[in-house]
Length: 298
Ligand code: PAF
Image (tube, rainbow, N blue to C red):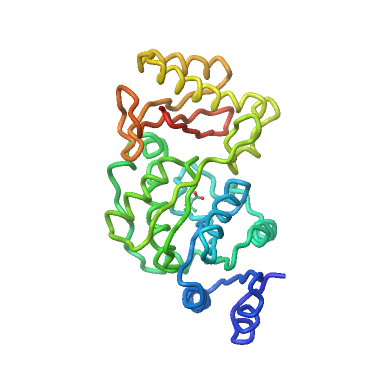
């Protein structure tokens, strides 16, 4: 059973039940719990989430646990990263299921802030981004990365982890957060974890549940086309025709392609030929569901 809240008695009990996960909902409880864990174990790993957890999130928590320090996870559906055309209320929520999943993979502490704690009345500060936040998702979802970066900076300040874990599936997000941490000289390391996939190659995502049965059947084509394109680029095929052929295959399979591009991995700038950091990135829609995926291009 997870412990909820942090009275002195609860803190004492928690300290003596190492496998018990603590759930905190106030900043003072979070700070007390993080300080205790840090003193006892010499560090913290952190997995920020918006809930609706799947095996991709579990892999992040397991990586944090495997690093030898306690894992802290947050669940906060961040309004600032949704724009006016995106329905925040439609975002899947399953707090009980998420807490059970986190406890099962060895998470020590879960932070469940409310909107007022994350965005206090009168707040006037957000993070402005250029570089890897430009283009792609930055164009498709104006303001999205400002919201992601701002909430991550706040969460990092609250938890003060040594490392924070992000999935490679959201490649651009991973690069935006990595760049922000470097630019703001924040004292933590960002660790990218390989995308977890269904057996047919579909990248796990909380959006997959919205696919129709026909959409679910077509969805793995996105990863297949990315992998095939990476292979043809590696065997010397010219880039632009290979990218056009990929877009054509996706359109034939019923996708509306937002972008399919070869980019420099860290900066997300488009490039003409693959190099060791290059990434093929793609976003394509099946009905109303936007699927994102990416693979190394070499
Ligand atoms: O990837 C997500 O779930 C979110 O963008 C994150 C990093 C938790 C920030 O709200």
